[in-house]
Amino acid sequence: MIIAVDGPAASGKGTIARALARHYGLPHLDTGLLYRAVALNLLQAGGDPESEFSAVRACDISQIDFADPELKGETVGGIASRISAYKMVREALLERQRTFAASPGGAVLDGRDIGTVIAPRAEAKLFVTAAPEVRAKRRFAELVGFGLNVHYEDVLADIRARDERDSGRAEAPLKPAHDAHILDTSAMSAEQAVAAAIEVVEQRRA
Ligand code: C5P
Image 1 (tube, rainbow, N blue to C red):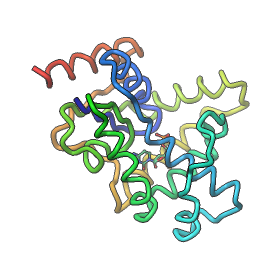
Image 2 (spheres, rainbow, N blue to C red; image 1 turned 135 degrees about the horizontal axis):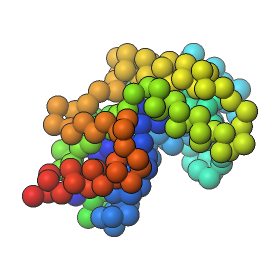
Image 3 (tube, rainbow, N blue to C red; image 1 turned 180 degrees about the vertical axis):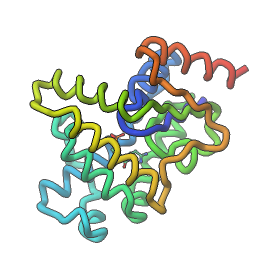
Image 4 (tube, helix red, strand yellow; image 1 turned 60 degrees about the horizontal axis):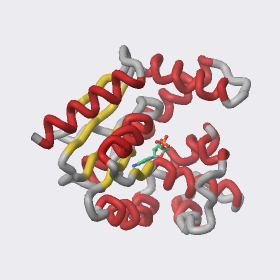
């Protein structure tokens, strides 16, 4: 069974995808990390995010340490959302994601275009969303927890900018697949969101 979990930044899709993977004993791929790895590569090489050519040259991510905390930061996230708009960057990362989705027994992938581009035939598709203010609050709490000195207003502005870029791009824009179940987690705790997601998957399986 392939489970596709898409949605905007800080919607809770990562938490849900990890929980689903544990629940069903499936491997999980956070595809945002691939784009973040390209972004970090580019940053470290002093490349220009405004240049598609420069971004494509950063697509060999074989040397990236996926445990590097810098990958999770807002700087890298912002660059990731810029370079992910390039067709050639998306193509360079496509095969790796499709191969993962084809894991024997199935897989859980989360990202922006899993249900639409990477695994359009996934048995279960979830589009996890929440109000921008709620997502900003969650991200803010997470960053404060990391010991970072951030302002809520800045985090909200970042989230809005990222939404606009991810939804407005020509290549694989952020949008629910026509057969995705929309899960709005605005008023849900993490536990409630996970329980709701499992229920959706169970219904799709039945
Ligand atoms: O999910 P995360 O915030 O880690 O993703 C970072 C950026 O990578 C997103 O803002 C988005 O632009 C891009 N991305 C994408 N397609 C995916 C996953 C992430 O374009 N499947």
